[in-house]
Length: 157
Image (cartoon, rainbow, N blue to C red; front, top):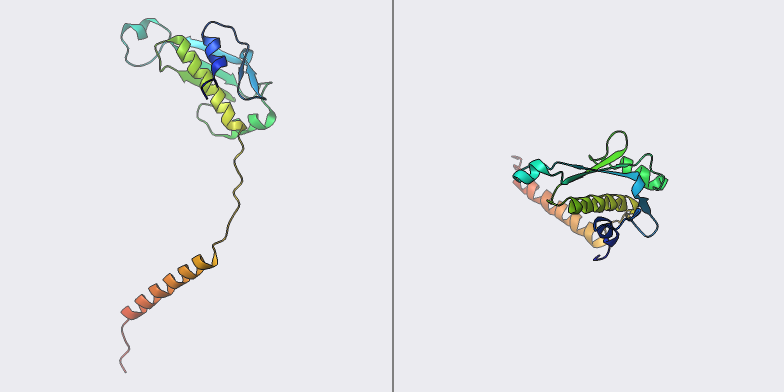
């Protein structure tokens, strides 16, 4: 997956990219993504107080024209805490001191979140225990029952 996010790297390296490729069949136009630079939280000295290096990324899932209906429904039903009641996915990236790296991280997280919604879970095929497993279970039950029976008091005749 070395080149999986090369389009995001190009976007952050100064090249203007008009869309983010989530998969071969799905891409999100940058016009649907709202990014804003804000001040980062936590320790960091003067840099934190002066520079807006953290990125707030907002993506409106409900009103996105590029998302297929099934992916949109899956994202809204996912229960992800980053999705508001209005259907807006909010991602905050503040790991790096560089605004470009935080922008890249936020776009990667957006792509991964949408990619996770495009995957379909493999359907589980229910199985039954085999004859040997059934026999082993019944033998263990009868052994346990015999042990308990041996502990009982014998009636006086």
